[in-house]
Structure formats: structure tokens, C-alpha cells
Image 1: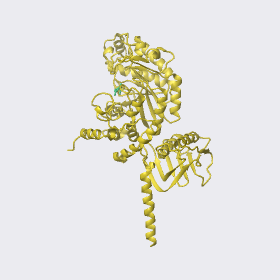
Image 2: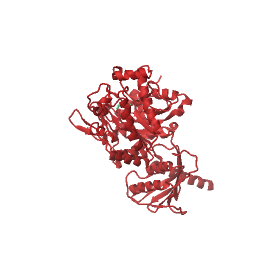
Image 3: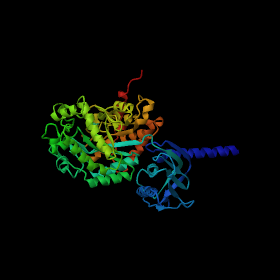
Image 4: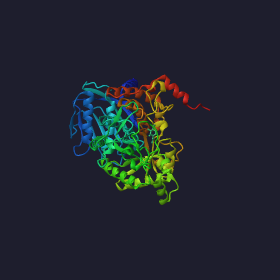
Amino acid sequence: MKMNLLAGLMMTISIGVNVQAKESNALQIIPEPQKTVLSAGQFTLSGTTVVVCNPSDDSKSVGDNLVGIIQNSLGVECRISDKYAPHQSAIVLTINKNSAANPEAYQLKIEHSKILISASSAQGLFYGVQTLRQMLPVQKTGAGTCSLPCLTITDEPRFAYRGLHLDVSRHFFDKAFIFKYIDLMAMYKFNKFHWHLTDDQGWRIEVKKYPKLTSVSSVRVDCKGDTVKGFYTQQDIREVVAYAASRYVEVIPEIEMPGHAQAALAAFPALSCSGGPFKVETTWGVFNDVFCAGNDKTFDFLCDVLDEVIPLFPGKYFHIGGDECPKVRWERCVKCQARIKAESLKNEHELQGYFMRRIEKHLMEKGKKMIGWEEILEGGVSKTATVMSWTSVKGGLKAASLGNEVVMCPQKECYFDHCQGVEAEEPPSFGHGQFLPLKSVYNFDPIPAAMPADQRKFVLGGQANVWSEHIPDTRQVEYMLFPRALAMSECLWSDPGKKNFERFECKVALHTERLRSMGVVVADSWNRASTKEKWEKLQPKGL
Ligand code: TNX
């Protein structure tokens, strides 16, 4: 009898837990945590809950962030305290400075009367808070209270580099949107914002020494006669960088060279091989007029630009582009040919190598690590450069075999300007026939199966790229980003062994609701029969 009672009791607990689990947001975290152990009971979060942190370390700023999140969700303002009183309803934030754990790792423990979030750094603590945030009600309730199931989450990222990119050259998105972008990134534990600031169609960053870069290079009149313009002042940039830093996001600026430079050449035609004239480009593609590699004035100009831009970005990396640089002008340029001779280079590809290495030297003198698109492998790359592999994973495989660090963003899985459903049912996107549905993103692994085990350590992580040729406004950026960014965040953070697309789809439905309630546009394309059918059709048939 006694045994039966106990068994019955156990069953009630386990049914209780299951029912609770099914209904709870707590088990629908994106990116999926490494380990979640559910236990019986629940914690009630309310206005009387105290957020406990140590005023003498960075837990205080994370605590302030948490108070804001709770206020926003439940409509109550929790008090911050530096002392924990037993039996008080509390969320205790602790930084264990002496711990050798990954600074991005955290533990989140929900008990009956308190929640404990601990990490070895404020960044880890911040991620614990982001996880807790996803457990709060999806809609702002203003109810003043909510229940959370008792559990323990032990979590850390798979990759240190978890990037999202945004092209602000082809279309310009203002500072307010960049803040929103960074907020959304942080919510899903991305930590690198690759800001594509210059290209043929627009230069978007103020350089005081060269005011024409903004007065001329940031303005174009498109084929419909509409003016597309905009740039960030240095003050704007400082604000964005500080905002990102408070959310543990490093901003990586990109200044494109030697190709994709026509906007700059429109203002400074003397830095090209032919001397111009040029206009800020109004169509899309790859253009032949690039910076002249034989003219020392090109390097003087670029180093001046870098010298002004570098101090605005305290992060480790600086992106110098390097992609899609046609060599036709260099082939016919007296100065470029003289440079090839003087430097004993074999051809124009080696001239590109010379260009990149000369710029890298300057960056290194200023304490920056150069990162560039895979074409920087052309004509010899230095060991210290980081390579972004974009046309496929091949560039990344080659870079890793040379011992260079790699960020994987192969277009087949990481180009969010590509169509996410059947083309006729989607807004205009890049190219024709490009198809990148949610499921393909979800199946992305930054470590290709073909990569030898001893080279895998060179893969820092991955990134999704949002090129904006066909993205005229911020609503469209959000549409292209979500829900695919959710899949990318799992690819970069979570254990690939635990991937399960059906489970992920359920989470996406919940997160769609949450994001929409925050005013974010989220595409439904993944959930259409036509998208699923197209995806199935494209799968290789079994043997
Ligand atoms: C290739 S990726 C480019 C961009 C385009 C993009 C469109 C890369 C390094 N270059 O200039 O915007 O394709 O998908």
C-alpha cells in the first residue's frame, strides 16, 4: 500500500512536470542549451522578487538589464539589492571571477524560492539572463507575476564567433534600426556584428579628413530617379559600438578594398587606374574600376581612412573586404605593372596579395587583426589573417589547411538575401533560383565533414550575411532575418548531436509570436507546404 502511494505520488509529480514542461516556454529556448534538467516545483516571479547582485562587479549592469526585462514583460519593477536574505523571493546573479570556465558559459538554476544565475564573467551572466528572458510570457502581460518550472540549465557556446552581418551600403538603415538589430542579436546570443559600411553603391561612414566620402560617395540616384543616401557620423558609430558592447556584441567594421570601391572612386577618381570619372553605382554586380594598386596615393588614402576609423572600433577584428576584385584595369595600368615588376610579383593575383599584406601590416601596427573574404587567399595570404569563406566551404578548408583562422558563411546556407520560399510567393531577393529555406540554414555545420580533425580548431565559427541589394527597408531586413537567424543561432551555439528540426519548428512558432509582439517582422515561408515540397524535391535521392 505504502509503495503504491509512493508510486502514485511519483506519477503525479512526473505528470505534473510533463504537463508543465509542455506548456512552459522554459523548454523552448533558442539556441538550445547544452543541458537542461527539469525538477519538480516552480518559482513565482513577481514585483516582490529581489534581483541580487554585487555592486562592485559587472553583475550590477546585468542586473539592471534583467530588471528592465521583467518590467517590460510583467509590468512590475523588481528591487536591486546587494544582499540575499534566505527565503526571500530572489534572482541571485553571481560572477565567479576565479573560475576558469569559458567566459560565455553560465548556469541557471530555478529553485522553489530563488533563481541562481552564475558565470565566470558578466558576458556569461548576460547569456543566463537572455535564457531567463525567453522563459517569461510571450506577450507582454502586465500581469505582475509568472511561474517558472524548477530546473537547472548548464550552458556554453560551441563556437566563439557567432556573427550576423548587415550591408548598409546598397541600402541604408538608420542608427535606430542598428540598435534594434543588435538587441535582437544579443537576445539569441550572437556576439559579432559585421557592419558592411562601404561598397560600390554607397560609402556610409564619416571620415573627417575626406568629407567628399560622405558628401559625394554616400548619395546615389537610382534608376527610378529616387535618391538613396545616408551615412553614420563618427558620433553615431561611437553610440552603436557602446550599445553593442553593453550587450557583449563586438562590432566588426568593413571597409572594402581593392574592389567594390566605386562609391569612393566617384569622389576620388585619381585613385583608380583610369582616372575616371565615375558615379556612385546605381546597379548591382561586380565592377571593373577598383583602387589602383600601383599608386602609392591609394595606400596613403586608405591608411588615412583606417587611422580615423580604427579608433572608433575597440574590437579585435577589422574587415577589409578583398572579394570580387576584377583584374582588367590592373592588367593595363602602367603603375600596376611597374609595381608587379618592382615587387617581383608573378601576376595581378599576386598584386592583390601584395595589396592585402600591405594593408594588413598597417592594421597590425594599430593592433588590429585583419579579416577578409576568401579572395584574400589569392596571391598568398599571411598566417595572421582570418578568412571568411563565402562562395562555399572550400576557401575555409584551404585556409584551415594553411593554419589560418576561418569564419564559415557559405552562401548556400548563410546568405539571407536568398529566397526562403518558392520565388513567386516571396518578395524580390538576390539572384534567381537561389533557395535558402529555414531547414537548409538549420542543417548548416560550420565544420565541414571533409575537414581533417586536426584543422577543426581553426574554425572560429560562422555568420549569416544580409546583403541589401534587394532589401529596401528595415521591415524587409527583419523578414529576411527571421526566423532564419534563429536557426543560425542554434548552428553556432548548440550541440549538433541534439539537433531535431521538428522540435525546432515548434520553438520557431513560439518565438515568432514573441518577436512579433516586440514589433519584429517574421516570415512564415518555412511553414508553407510549397516551401517544404520544394525542399524535399531538392534533396538527393537515396541510393
Ligand atoms: C557576393 S559575398 C558579394 C556581395 C553581394 C552578394 C549577394 C561577397 C563577399 N560579395 O557583394 O552583395 O554576393 O549575395
